[in-house]
Image 1 (tube, one colour):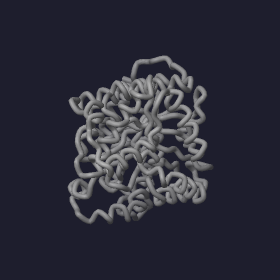
Image 2 (tube, helix red, strand yellow):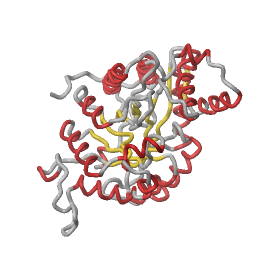
Image 3 (cartoon, one colour):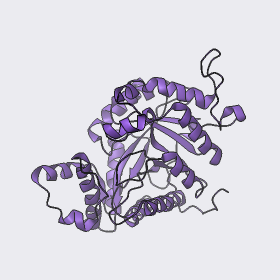
Length: 361
């Protein structure tokens, strides 16, 4: 299965480059427009040799439209033919493992051999929304039970509950009961050490959310590598990191764009979530001292500027972390800016322009 996990570095990129998509919705835009941009982005990423396009599960956040990764991935699968598609991730405590197994079994049937199942143990939202999703206020149980949920999900994916198990006669369909087929590789996602250690112990690939937990990146990756035990999935650790990155033709424009994402995050963290503000609104916003400190700290973790500046920043980050793959996310106001950024980064690394083929029918 490792061939379905490890990517190939193209052009002068030090490692494979991929895309993390939150399907961002900017002020004055609609969810329909945001989803259309995601289709454009997946096709651009495929043309330019990016390895994967992942969609992240979030809830009750006006600035994103990615509450249903499986639905979005099915749509992207219909518009692409080569790029790997996956969840970055599905928040497993929000769902019954059988439901996730069936959703991703369906995706695997739609796009054979190019689906990833990334799993997280956080809710992907605030506590009240998590309670509404799970129909319970005992939220700690979901996180605490994550290893057991993961084991149950894996058995549904492999259709291998032992005889005598209560679920031994239950089959996730589409799935192995319908014939010997591949199934999506499972990734563990995290922003702290818990999932890093678990991924290592299970011999699974690991994705770390550097884009919002930079201080924990190197400790978590070290823990993953130290804990790693070879498995049928991987014979050596494989870790990617999510990186906030945006390139523009001019450095001033790059700063103008990333400020929209920083203001959006400030509002989210202070209980005022909304659509991602337009650049004009972000530039005109009167930041208080504490707000300015937050924004400066946030932007300090974003790789942005001209294409050469972004390439240098990504190269430095890769050297510091030893990441095996960089997954780039650009959560800014306009779809045009996001698409332009990925094109510029591809050019900066000399990524190929691969031939387009019609999507799978």
